[in-house]
Length: 351
Image (cartoon, rainbow, N blue to C red; front, top):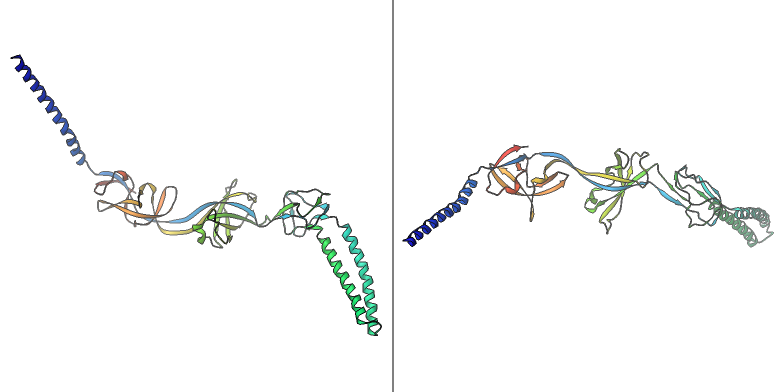
């Protein structure tokens, strides 16, 4: 009798446990049914329209003088005069330095005296030749002596001029490297001279932009310490792209310089390569990267549509779409990771 009661108790306990487990197994199905019956996903959207943008790039550059020259002597000698005022401005042809030329001046005087005697001899023999007092050969030798002395005088005068070091153009003198009385040679640099009245900015651009950097193109640039925007015009470009960096070197003439523009200064150059009056710009976060490109999601007659696009220029927050999107389309900008081709959406905000 006791065994029968115990057996009946176990049977009731098993029946209760089975009922509970069946209820638990049904609860996920019921929750899934509720999820499927939930409403459309709220999203934000953008009404696509066109605008005007400029295709611009920014590169670094360097301010350069229009001309810069190392001043060196042409011959060896001792400096007897030095007129190098560091940082001073000189005119073209101003005497900067003088090398001792006493020996050359003495030689020049000697040659001039010999020339005077040779000229008198040539005059006498010319008169004698007229009366057949001498042969033509004797006269030719006297004339040759005159011509040789004139050539020696010219050579000596050239050597004397080489002892004078003059400014090749108007410009500003740099730091001097020698002192008066020093013995110098062509290997010595006395100073440098820079044409600072006209300045240039030199910069390099990637080779893909090389075809657009034409002579006469206007550019803008900035320098540290000055809030002024400077303008320049492209005046020259390298004949080929650098094989190491794949960049093209370009120079531009600066239109108006001021005290902040010093040769060697760093410059930030901004180049506007073109303007598009019908550009479509969309937020960066509305683009979905895929294996073979980029996609966006468009709302079309209440249905979402995935589209492949091709992009162009970009800025800090937006990207230009050059293919795959048209004016008037409704672009979904939020909730992109939760959307599927058959998803239902509700636009809560349209920009």
